Length: 67
Image (tube, rainbow, N blue to C red; front, side):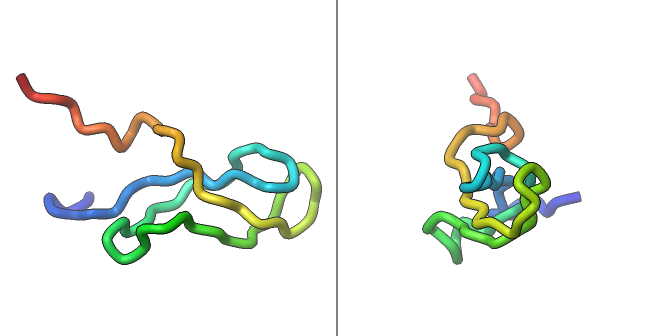
């Protein structure tokens, strides 16, 4: 369970070789404000390719608005 004041966000990683989202991870937005880039295995192309963070809303990070 995450702590109440935790600043980590769930991000999706999109493969540059095939364009699909294969991996999800967390990122500390305070220490890493720019996009994350990792080299991970692409099961579609069967190579190690660069995976780039998406800015698309994944639905799990959204805090409901209180009225």
